[in-house]
Image (cartoon, rainbow over all chains, first blue to last red; front, side):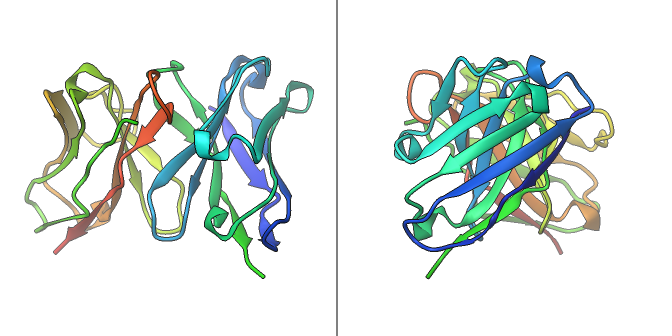
Length: 120
Length: 109
């Protein structure tokens, strides 16, 4: 079973940048698609981005693709999310997760989440 | 973009049956997955591929999907079932690729 632990969240000023990390264990990380999903306070889940096993393909929700970058380092069993030009509406808990059966499947592994707060 | 519509809240007495709906255009043609989320916790998968139950999820949880509505059914509801429930599908034809419903707060009276 995949275990995921996010880190890197915190308080950042509007316009600032932050890099989130997600450490994976328990499986062969390089065999799995990975995703970031976020949840604003009191709101529902919102998918952010996906990355293929080898990092060769990435997909983003259109509204974030110019500011957010998903990446991975399979040698370090790690997933990343670089977030630039942050806005107040980016305030959310950010989860890393792994989708099964890409393009139709479910997320059965989730991290505990890391809180990003964008505020002056 | 594909939209999943859930009622904001559902209330049910202990021991009764709760039904949480997830509406979407021809959702019956898609695979629907359901998550339970308790305050301060990450989502937990409770139903996948419309009707399948992960190991460790009680048989009281079941799902169905047809036409324009998918339904999560929780039988013999317990106090511990009180949580937010959210449906999820993929829509590879538009943005976003992965779609979540807005979530339904299940209250056990």
